Length: 143
Image (cartoon, rainbow, N blue to C red; front, side, top):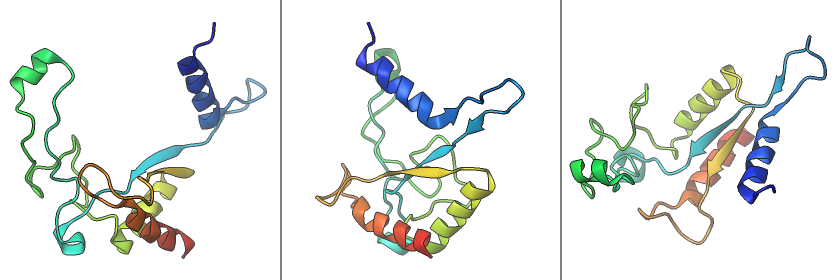
């Protein structure tokens, strides 16, 4: 019997690529990147947004015992991310940053982006209103 999670995985798989009809053809991939609308800097947003997110409790009890959760990161040197952006911490409300990131995504063959939008009703757990960032993103894309 097909579980709902199997069906979702199947649909997601189909949405990311189409298999070629013959073995001589290359697959026709459609690449989607996730784009998070919640990052900000004091220069643009008057404070760090999500770069300073508190350390969350680890799901594994043994690891959770070793890591102190609740402590905030200290940007720009120490950020809440396993990777450090090449351009440094940035705000998604900075049109120049969004333009540069979209250009880079296009250059590497990304076809579409999936945005992290929390809706019009408010913000996320840090009070970040992604609706404002979405408006900025749309303005850049329409340019």
